Image (cartoon, rainbow, N blue to C red; front, side):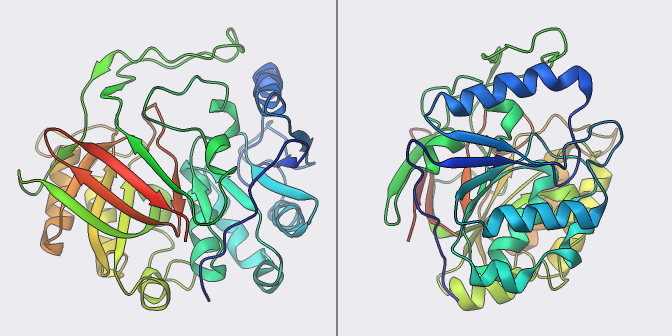
Length: 342
């Protein structure tokens, strides 16, 4: 197995929308339309699947969600698949997906983050398909700050491309847009100032490896299983080592501490040359902060740990290609991540 990059999207290509986890409620339909128009504005045809019900926590029964996602990812007429957002329960798809069919088919871009990590990361680990950990469909209309890209930019790149992103040094420190009252919103109030932070040391960092990772709260449940065997992936695809990225969605510092300890014991970080940690607004506790939790759990790895990267639930978004070769540079003058699609 080697990393397989989907064909770059071109105007006229078809992008499919499905909800492998949570669907879209009636009062969010206007935002969905706005998001679809943002993709169509790039020249793509958008098709919406049947698994989109937002009346509960699931868009459809597991078998139906798995069948629709598999069908979209193996349909040669569909060039990219993106969910409206994440959710809570994508893990129930894993034993139901047609893994043999996914391995045999030409790769299609799969995009998303949060609960989508539960599918994105195993898809790369088990089939060698590159996937994009990036903003979901509902976030797509937002303007991208200087230095960053949208997932819509990454999926246009041919194999062999080299692309750099830098921290904008600004982030959303408070509040969330209400899509019910403001479905057209397309600009973040980036009211926080700050870049990346090295947790384990204060020296400069320049390190390479293949990218893999995602949301802590979801991936902790597959680490060490056949769907989350990062060590096997590293042996097969990344003898040079990995750049592992993780991010906390909302669990408190003690929960993240336990989850990261468990992931480390399961071998998730064994081949890491460095760990990138997404900026989070998740709660500290009275005796343990989120960054202390990360350092306690992952400090024993003895590799650079860089926090406050724009790859989590705090906007803006720095999309990452699972499986891509990458170099991260961090110093007082430079906060840059370069991805090479080879």
